[in-house]
Length: 326
Image 1: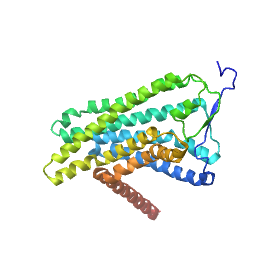
Image 2: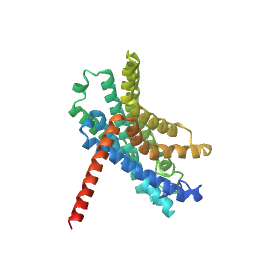
Image 3: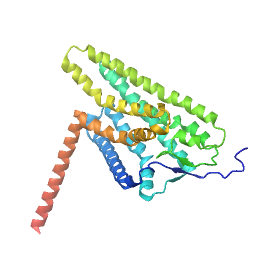
Image 4: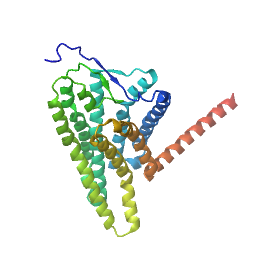
């Protein structure tokens, strides 16, 4: 073979934000703050969904799953990016790079299915309210959630297995801040047409159905809302799905724009900005959207805050009484 006498590459260099050396400290602090808020915000939503019995509904069960996914999704990219910004070391092993791509890809696919399950839940709640409780049973909810995680993990497994069989013999620079499919494949010096074809087929097979289910669900939802006789009824129905609709729009719009735009040098900065949006900002925005726009989440947050104040004040009172007795 043509590559048999060449030196095999054992690590890649993630170029990332190499053109902004003076902004590296600022970017580190910004991404660190985003990571902390993303993890803490999503953990707070999980805690609220578990603790507040008013949130023990299918919609919030799926929201809890989404809030479990988002910190994991961020953690596939941000810790490695933060380390490189802090130390300047942009090297990552070939195996580590492919593993990073697997977790990024599988979690993105899982999010597609979870968002589709949430849109189907809203469709049943608004379009089939009389049958909602029977259709959205506890067993069916668990099947939808488990199916989302399982399908997501399977979505990229075959492609990643074939990627591990590829040979890399230079160059070894990836013009990105994380390991995505196309930049990795470009560096392969062995036959990769099969893995490229398989990736395209699986991308359509695993992402098109949940996307179409989401779109169709919202078409029916909007038609049903517009047919409602009262304005207050329309507002109430739309408010129950507006947060999810915003999240879905942001997720798919940025994802599709990144992968459909041509990869040219002129659009490099735009691609980088969009990649930051769907890998780093979307997991941050999701808990904010659901907590700020959702009345039930805000009420649960207020109750939790008031309980915390009562516990703290009673603790302080007992401490003061104990000190006085001394």
